[in-house]
Length: 352
Image (tube, rainbow, N blue to C red; front, side, top):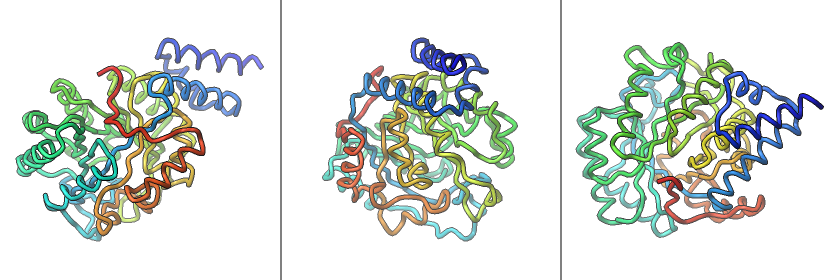
């Protein structure tokens, strides 16, 4: 009983002060008492609802291309994977996706893709201007990897509002084990700093349960995120992809990911936290479990249906049904079963 009371005290302390010591985070990540875990989730839900109500924001995801210059060891669209059928959407296809999203009611578009070289940066800037001109009041989010500060500035000036760049891990050794030579955590973190300086709403985040990841490295990530204070936190369980060097490693845990949602909700009450597609891929109720742990965003897929299976970051990626723009009614019905509803606004963080 004493240990249970002590763990609930830690949760209360995190809710009140928004930070803990590293060993206290470790204790919350490893506690197995179901009553304590449910208390953690309840506190996270209360905080999320105090900030955002019971509305869940939508982001219309458009996967621009599966062409990537990087060779990350976990990613199915890594440049050395010759089994991928490569594609790049035309500007007309992308604008058509936005138009479909507009008719459905989306107020945020997320342009995601493999990391191109800087030679395509002007093309992206022109695309952003087109979207901004046609839908001036809607938010434009980019998730296009590492680039120069000048490129980020060009895209911001063109009209981009938000940028998602998961740092993957703050631990340098683990970062080296997951990425090819030439990619460094120092540069990834520098990119995040540039994005903040340029006025983007910035998102960072990690994979949970990635190969070689330790509990200590997860704690290190929590402490980095609590200090960096991103506007958005993108976290999902690792899922292997069969054509990568890490194909034989087991997938991460939905339970651990949900626990991280809750901890980070208490540490960063105003953050926008998606219940990610990877959660829905690993468990039929994974997305709802994420919301019940404090997440408040979902990202239905707006990409052309013929291309969705080609954007194969990991195996069996959920991109149809309630994970797609075509499944909005199913999503709405699913949310209603747990007492939530779709919020059709842009969904900005309250502290902006």
